[in-house]
Structure formats: C-alpha cells, structure tokens
Length: 383
Ligand SMILES: *Cc1c(COP(=O)(O)O)cnc(C)c1O
Image (cartoon, rainbow, N blue to C red; front, top):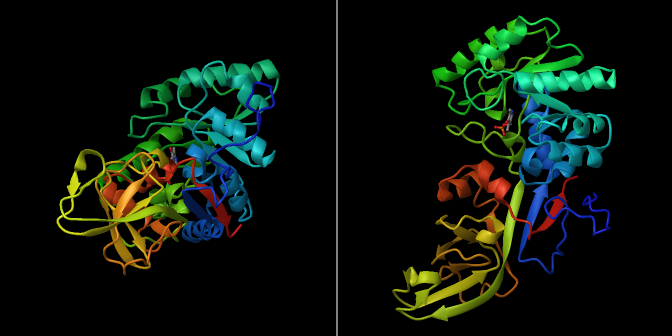
C-alpha cells in the first residue's frame, strides 16, 4: 500500500499487518481465520441458498479486512461491504479485481470518479448521490453498478420514503445506474420480539416495490436469526462472522475468533495500606501479590472497564485504574511465584469472551473488536 506521498515510506498498515514481533510486543492478538470461515458456513447453512456477503468495515471489525476477505473468498464469498470509500480502495488493492465491494456510507461529493476507477459500488443513500452517480456514468459513457439503500425506519442512512417516491416518479432517474441491490438496515434486529422489525420489513417491501426490480437485501447478522422472511436475496453479516453473539438473549451460535493475551511486565508484593495505581483508587487491605501487564487503554482496553484477566482458569481481578500502557492485576489467587515476567495472561479467550469483556465495560462486542489496538503482535491462524 502506498502512503500517497510518493516518498516511499515503508508500506505497512499497522492494523492489518503485524508490524511488531512476538518477542517485542506487550500483547498478542491471535485471529483464527478458520473460525471466521466456519462462522460463514454456519450462517450460510441458516440461509438455505440465499447469498451471503461479508461486512469488512472498520478494517474487518478490527481484525484485518484483507485477511478476512481472502478467508471468506475461500468459502465462495464474492460480495463485500465496507463503510468508507478509503476502505474500499484499500480493499480493492489488497484483493484485486473480481469480488464486488460496496461502500455503505455512500460517496463524498466529488469522489465518484475515484470510486468508479477503483471498481467500487456505492450504496446510494440520497437523491443527490443518485444524481452524482448517474452523471458519472454518463460522463464515462457506460453504466455503473450501485446498491440503492432506503430508510425503512432507522433514520441513519438511505433514501427517506419521500425521496423514494420522488425518484420513482422521475423518468430517467436511474439511467446508467446498474442496480445490483435494493437494501435497507434493521435498527433492532438483536431484539427479535420487537415489533419494530416487522414494521421495518413491511416498510422495506413498500419502498422497494416503487423502485426498479432488483435483488433485495435486509438482514445483518442478527437479522439472519429473525427467520427466512428477513433473508431475501442477500444477507450482510459482520459481527457474527467475528464471533460476536448475534442472538444476545440466547447462547452464542458462533465460534469465538480471537484470543488476546498480554505479557506480565513485572510482579511485586505490597503490604496492607499500599496505594495502587493512579489516584490510589485501590488500597490494599492486607498483603497482595500484584502483576503489571503491558496492555492498557492505549491498546483500546477501555479505562472504565472494571474487569479481570485470566491465567490457567484463575481469575485475576484488575486493581486500581487502567493506565495507558499497563494494568495492575491481583494475582494473590495463584501460588506464589507461579506468574513471572514475560508470562501471558488472557484478556479475551476461552475464559472471557468478547461479549463478556464488553459486558464488563458497559459496551458491545463490536466496540471491543474495533478498538483492538495497533501495538499488538497479530498472529493469524487457520488460514
Ligand atoms: C454494519 C452493517 C452490517 C453488518 O452488521 P452486523 O450487525 O455486524 O452483522 C450490515 N449492513 C449495514 C448497512 C451495516 O451498516
């Protein structure tokens, strides 16, 4: 990848490609591409014949869009979604021509020629974007592919019902636009009992009927689990591929994908009354064995996350505040001397899932994944 300056800076993407050796890193992130492939197969099995895309926005939910794309391609996945044009351009460079890449947020005004040159398909979210793409196609003397997104009741992205009605009555509105999909997005798909889902589905049906006939797409990960009525012609899962539970009220039907381990930087013993960490927010009631690990909020581990690490099935609670580059653990539950410098403790893995970590932090698995920092040694397995 070029940095665009033409000065030949080293070509690397700190997030997608591991730039830190295992020995040098403070923490190790293992990404199981085989588990991502198995999750794709599980979703495909539920979709019984319906096509299934891979959503790779935010660098593949923090796990490396290029690596995830090539793993999914081996399962026959040939449609990818990113959020931003820049992500699409980078992904196109990484995976080459062939798979369709859709840009969910649409194109910033003026960027249409760049998108067309990279062979990307915008998700058209407004009449302004539709006009700009139509003009671009006309200028190039060819038709250009796109998806049309309608807002069926989330008020985030997509043409509002009034806009859909307006373009439906306009002759030539879609001239030169090769409509690959008409799509919409569900606001509450992870709450299957919510009437909002059926309301959105019916509104989607109404709106898409006003548009030229094309394949349709509605379901994200959780939407797939709302049943066949939501599957249409293409599903667009992201989170479930990466092991986040798409059915929060039920056990996770997906395989875990990541393991995050941090190295012990130092161990110590403190006596009763010792103040621990910034602000001395924790004071030892009695003698405590502590270990400081090389991972902190600078690695995307939220400072307000009151949580724990694990070692051989033993819970090691955080004590004091999370620092930028370190966290102090109470290791008194382990035999003295069991944990030493360089040993690895688990932050995410068999003892603590992405969703568990999110729960402690008062957030969602999506945010845990996309926050995973650039300083980890990244190890891909199962590719
Ligand atoms: C992010 C996104 C998806 C994927 O959602 P998940 O919940 O991660 O499966 C699908 N469609 C759109 C429009 C999105 O923004």
